[in-house]
Amino acid sequence: MEMTIKDPLGTAVVVLSGGQDSTTCLFWAIKKYKKVIGISFDYGQKHIKEIECAKNICLENNIEHHIIELPILNTLTENSLTRIDIDVDSEKPKEGLPNSFVDGRNMLFLNVAAIFAKQKGAHTIITGVSQTDFSGYPDCRYEFIKSMEVSLTLAMDYPFSIKTPLMWLDKSQVWNLADELGVLDVIREKTITCYNGIKGEGCGKCPACKLRNEGYKKFLQEYKK
Ligand code: ZN
Image 1 (cartoon, rainbow, N blue to C red):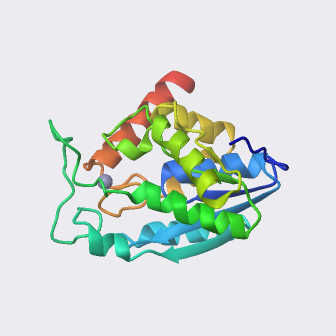
Image 2: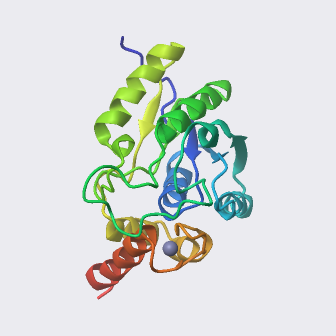
């Protein structure tokens, strides 16, 4: 099925968690699209502060923002992002998926984002997934995104394009992109990536912080000599 998007740079819907990656995508989209809408999901994550970050960043940049409740994820799965009695793995497990992986989360988010986008007359959905610093999440892979794009287009008989500006960037390159977009400080100070819910530099100990902070160091070494 071939379908073309009439207005490819019209409206884009950005899946916004309030973290470094999705917020960088938001600013990337602001430069590129006529209209940008942020959409965040409340699925019972322990750190509701993420959503607060997303909301505030949109407010400060005059971006329309919606929060959609998806409590069903928490009902259906057991994982360390939503369950207060499960700690996030501090190291990547040798086998299997990290306990911060939530089955079907990205797929569900993209599905809901697509339903929302169609209502808004938007064809573009933007997500901050990346295959480069692959933490073992199968639904961050390029192949999955491409197949999802086809499925959504078939399911709603409406052409969708899923853009993943960070797909092939490592964390230092994501920092550099933020710098090029002129929002390095915004990303450093106003986003939250930490699994322990600490804004900015975070706890420094969880896998998300390690990735973020090591990426920042590498960015300084490679781009800011
Ligand atoms: Zn942390």
